Length: 207
Image (cartoon, rainbow, N blue to C red):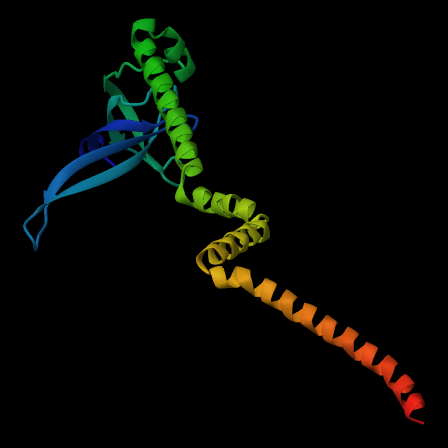
């Protein structure tokens, strides 16, 4: 193929994991034929980079060439723009950050932890003071006077009998009447015995 007829593209490097190979992405917009709407189009090219010059984010110019491998038929022409990427790990970034920036974050995290702990304590307190616990304690309070019910009933009965005795004077006189009746019965019984004892004597005299 004549070099003047080869395609040339400009794109950004998105991957450099493979050896001597870089993936270049080109993005452009195209109007849809039916809906007449701008559509975003993306194309990716496998580019031959024998010296591994490409870095992530670089803007490069590539040119079409003979097939070098199954997917790679583009080669790197030049690097148009370098992207400054810090070659440090995230851990190094965290350690290098000034304490004026990290201190407020640490204080905010501690404040959130304290608020969460206080919320948990309040929930436990509300659970202890909930009506369910008070309902469970009620039977214990009622169980104490249950044992004293017979004594209380006896006291009430004694009080009722005393009040009835004070109100009804006839009730006090009844025992005396009964005693009088029992005394008369005893006298009659004694008289009967005497008559029975005297009866045989009288019969013998008559004979």
